[in-house]
Image (cartoon, rainbow, N blue to C red; front, side, top):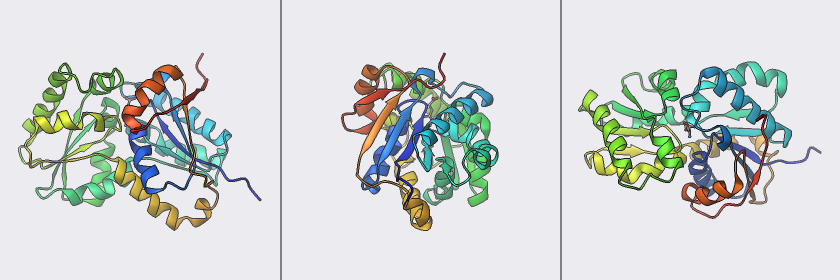
Length: 277
Ligand code: DGL
């Protein structure tokens, strides 16, 4: 019988931990391996090709650990690499394994939150340029209008622990003012970057209290619950000891000191060399 293996969860750095935290709440029985490619973060400003190659390396590493299911808990990687990996690489590398992203589950739900049919999407430059959100939302909610804003300074502010400091206010307000200036009717703002939940209190302080702000973690976790119910054969290949291991491609000391801000609990990571010369 095939040995059972953990679910792989990937991000360019720490952001995916906000998703893993919600997944573990909803599916505590499974085992997980989290990997943050901190040495090469941020992915947001990088080209399609670079993000694709980095993400494929990560996916191959998860497969080498035995993972049957890998979640790209990163919008930038989901936007720029997921489709190519699913369509081109998986059939050759591992046709029975699955790689899922965070964009599809979010776009399936987001239109339900808006009464005005006007949704603001905040993301990295890469996610916004890919147009993945407007394209995917149009499939599920053709009547919804999507307004996007790239916030290139937000991930560096978060990764450098400045997200709750007064210095962050300028960049948070600047992008929210710009987004809300495009359409006054926006009543729902999606945080389409897994790092951004750390800024949620600041974001709330700069928008009208009637605006709904959506983080993806819970949505992605709920969608994974449904996915595993539908794919019982795959679910049966996942080990169930309630254990999580953490890997980073950069310093474990830095990772362990920042990661708990995202995961909500202390984290002890191991170092990983991932094609970094
Ligand atoms: N957390 C990633 C996302 O959801 C982006 C971070 C980065 O730019 O590396 O898009």
